[in-house]
Length: 394
Image 1: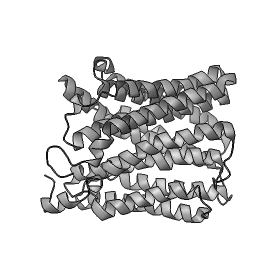
Image 2: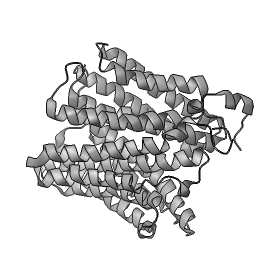
Image 3: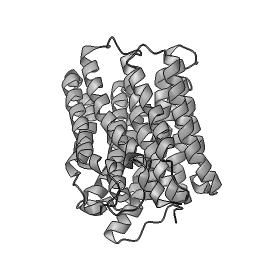
Image 4: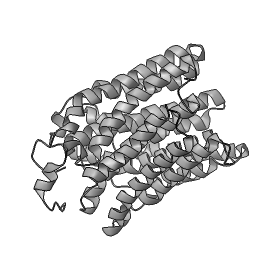
């Protein structure tokens, strides 16, 4: 049972700062649409004069540490309250955390020194890790303790990303970005395998499939190896391909145990299955493709389809569940989920086969992404700004 000491105090908090998912889902989803709008423009117009960092660096960094990290922090700050029974981050502490995330997004477009932006963003990740970590440790929730080193790795990768701009680290920005993509792959694999089969079984009145430890190890351990291989010389590329194929094959088997074909009638279920399935497909295709250009494009099958798709499906579900609405009777987001999967295919498979049409295909993919997250903001934003309809705190 969550320990709520005084409901009057809870009710006095501005609704958007009552729990982590509220500001981070709203601002994160809004920023997803804004950042891709800016990137599609930059992709054709070139480096903006007012942007203090290279456009490509900004694009990848903001998708990883801007948009994606905001959603992850909002989700975990909310979930850790349920995991531990300890009140979540809220009120002024949550407002501070949101400010530390928001300020760097703006400073990139001013004459502020990069070291200042890096410092503020490091404080954001460090404070988020503390808010999560002390609750997990206090409640002795060792099953969720892996989030602590995971956030430490993200903090270090973020610092290295800024340092790479000045040539202060012995590896490139692209190596750091690839490592962070593996970071998100690990996170999505662990969390997805926990919740997706549970949601499916509960909704369809099916027995929850038992987890298979050796299969989960085959899926996750190669990803940990790949994270480290990102910083090693290219002669290890053959080992990367082996690791990607092993992890991809294990993930395919795991997904099949969930019986995803049973979910076709329910958008909140098939969206999770399709997005998660982008993980093994992207891994297997990257492992099997010898063409570097094609393999690079398959990164977008993961980044848009898996990362973007799972984010959109989960924030839709969590928003309804934590604002008192009936999860399966809320606004239908089926078309938005389909848009993201289509965007992933257009940007990855489409550009691979028709590279001469890359500008058009990037525009189409970007527009579908923008529309998908805009639909979320329009349909669910009011829920995040208002108190729970059932009168409960949170």
